[in-house]
Image (cartoon, rainbow, N blue to C red):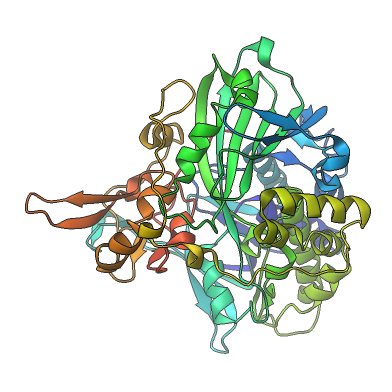
Length: 544
């Protein structure tokens, strides 16, 4: 099938790109064929975000979004920021001690899954073809080396690689321009960055893993519009922080972000999150409630210094596939959307010119550098590096000073040239962490949590968690790092099992995978390669 534009990923970046392209095409009376492919079973099935949403990009895309029924129903009414000293005590920080970027006046507490479902409806009304359940598995390269589209994954292939009775071959979706909007650590995006050397001269990308649960709570404990953030405990050996948002319908969204540059291989981000919920500041709201959803997703948080060149012959990276999240705000949806709007403008300009379709979309760089997106990311460039350099407390103090006094331009440029997976230390040099057993009331185990994510994969299919060398987990990772995949995975995918003869092996429970990509990022030997499974596999988040 041939299109003018193929977009990979029906998240905020991809759908904003699609909508804007069609809006501009209608203004210019151009007839374009645009399609969006989405690996989730439906649009929104793989979307996981906090989320406090800034409407700046949405205002540009659909100025009358309120009358159009966009699912933004809960304005932020109050902000609380805490420093958790330990498991019992906390200090509430006054406004002057928090960066201006953390204030949420005018923002909304939303389900980004539902926002994306709404955006998909707008895209389809504008004439975009949206194909959920189709995973983009390969890149098509033209004879001149430019990108010419994508190939969707085969369906109905057995674990041994043989076609089953249900076999359906993948389709070639060819395009003049291809937009990659896969989200953080995109399967194809990381290939493109390497293929075209897009990160030359840039700091390495940095990541966190973000957890989220949705709780139905007692109406007497619910304060619709309240936003609570914290730093400090339980993260003694990692940086990061928690969030708790009072959404509509007596629901609370609670989560923890753990930066993936931590050193102790015994650390379990999932168990740190379970501990968090026992802190009195968190417990007071969710105690007596019912947990109804769970999920986890990696976050690209390197910011301005880690942004790759986003264009290459025949295509462009947008949103978290490029790393446009503003970690100083803990927000990436409005920035992802804006990157998509700029990509759409650039593509429309290119399609209207007498030029070779596979050209590099160089006009994007000028649009980006003249936009508020560039300024916002530039002014937040020191946020992550300062936290890594000085720690959560003093890094936070520097960031407050830079944002509140210097407006994000303190005339210093901190950079973090380390790579997250290289920070992991040897197991023998770090103390094991004794995590309390989950109580089944506030804290839970991994398998019961994965159940709430509605994760499902066709069992008889090739494993999408590929080991580059099968021997590495037992011969290197286990003796050196106590095989950290057992702990950094939030879904119980990786287990060390022992045979009756005493032989050990790494068992991969790929059916549990929630597509967070943490294994692809944190494995110390970079031996795990996450590729797309059969389309429609993975979590099915109803309203995350």
